[in-house]
Length: 115
Length: 114
Image (cartoon, rainbow over all chains, first blue to last red; front, side, top):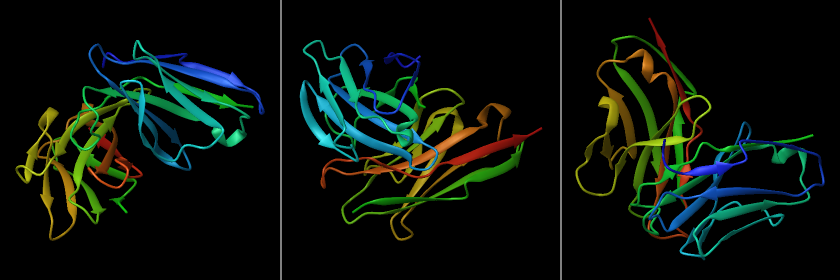
């Protein structure tokens, strides 16, 4: 158990809909990262927040947005969903803000299925 | 720009045999390199990381990797495979410049035969 929690575990929705994925980091960790893992794209970094502020941006679509709240939990919002958005979405957390040296601890993921 | 190439999407070894998973990277700045393991239906777990200190990095579960700048490689090895090593392994590269992104390889699935 990494100490990172994600809810829900599974999510099934329809095209055009909007969903929110939630992540609670390990106690004491200030950074939260979001990743998407799909069969065709592999594992992709989406976005990082550090202590409430956006720190780094990866291949995140404009239809997706994220935020980190004062209690450090984070939410990833996915809107106008398409079939291709079906994937595993992972959250990770770390103590500091450097992806290069900080150890990231991954949550179990949320499996999103868009029908 | 940075990139990672993992050679072989599937590797099969016998229990007790050497495990060798290959990773080559491309980076215009000093890289930081990682190996992660993903067991079925779980998130990723860090095995080891290279952060410009010793070139031979020892990780958990008996794994180690050697950073070879001249070959732009960071191959993962384990002297003797166990059945419990069967999983998917990801090599990743990051840096302190260029937007601070982590780039993952496509992954290598390791099968261990009894």
